[in-house]
Image 1 (cartoon, helix red, strand yellow):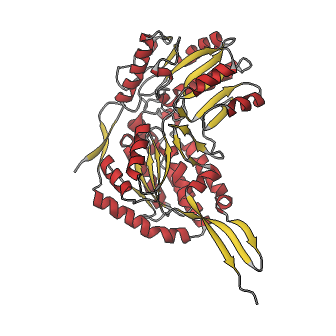
Image 2 (cartoon, one colour):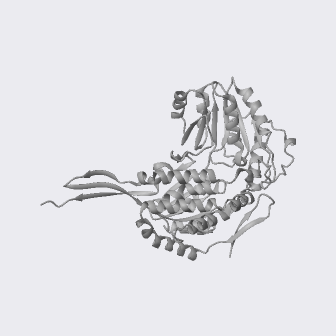
Length: 461
C-alpha cells in the first residue's frame, strides 16, 4: 500500500503520512456520497446553512491544534494565527446570501401558468485543495456546495495532508452527516481514474496549470463540470499620484506574506518613473525587516517555503534573472537563516525585463521584480504580457482612471489601492492560463448548481 507523506519544511522530516485509498474503496466513498445527496438536498436550506456554520464554529474551537499543524505542514508562522479570519469571513458571507442566490427566478405565477427557473445541486462535488491556503481555498467551494445541497468529497495536497481530515472531523462533529462531507487520501492515478469514470458531478481544483491540464484530460468526454484556479503572476502598477507609503506597505506584503506563496500574491511591480527611485528604496527597507526562521517561534515573521523544491525554483529564477542583468537589492547577510533549502530570504530585483522568466513565469516565492514605466499604456502592455490573469493592483487616487485601465487588463479582478485579498461578495475568477469558472459571490452558487426550468400549464375550468 502506497503512503502519502507530508515532508515538513521546518526540519525536512516526515511530519504526517496516510495510506493512499485504493480505487475500490474510493468508489465506495463516492457511492455513499451519492446515496446521501438527495436526502441532504431535501433538508431545508436554513438547516443546511446552519450545519455548515456549526462546522465552521467547531473548527474554530480547534485553533490551538490547527495553527501549529499548519506551521509544521507548510511553514506559515504561528504568529499569524492560521487562516481563521478569511475562513470565517467567507463562510459567513456565503451563508448570508444563500437564500437569495438560490431563490427561483419567477417568470410567471398566474391562473394559467407557473413558469420559473430553480437552482438544483449538481450532486457530488469533488474538491481538490492546495497547500498554500488549505483552509480558505477549500471553504470557497465546500461551504456553498454543501449549502446548495451537494455532497462533498475533499482531497488535499500531500503537503497539507491533515487539513481535509480536520475539516471533515469538525463538520461531522457539528452534525453534518458523515457521508455528506468526506475526506479522502488519493494518489494522482486514482484521482484521474475516478474523474474519468464520471464519479463526480462537479470538480473544483486549485493548483498548478499542469495539474489543471491533468484534470481536463481525465474529464475529457465525461461532460463533468470543472472549476479551475491555476497559476498567477499578478502585477501591481504604481501611478504618479499614488500614496507611496501605502503602496509600498501593501505591495511588499502582497509579494512576501506566506513566503510569497499566495495565489494572488504580487510578483511584479511597474512604477511610474517619477516615484520609481523612492518606491524601490522604501521597498528594500520594508522587506529587510523580516525575521526569517522557525515558524513555531512567535518572533518569526517569515517562515520557510512549503518545500525545498519550491524554494529551488525561486532561486533558479533569481539566478537566471541576475545572469541576464538584473540586480538583487536585499543583502543576504541580513538573513543568515537562509539555508539553501526551504528557508529562503526575501528578495527585490531591479533592472528586470520581460526577457526574464522571473517577470513572466510564476515564481510563488518571497521575491518580486520592479520595473520603471513612463505611461499607462506602457504599464498596460507589460501587465498583459503574461500567460496568467488572476488579479492586478492599481495605485492611484483616481477611481475613473483605474476603471479605464482595468477595462484594458486581461485579469479576473482589478484592485485599486489594495492587493492580495479575496472579497467573498465578488466572484473569484481568472482568465488565460489562470483557469476557468469562478467561486464565491452569487456566481459561485450558480456554478455549484444547475438551472432547472418549470413550465406548468394550469388546468382551468
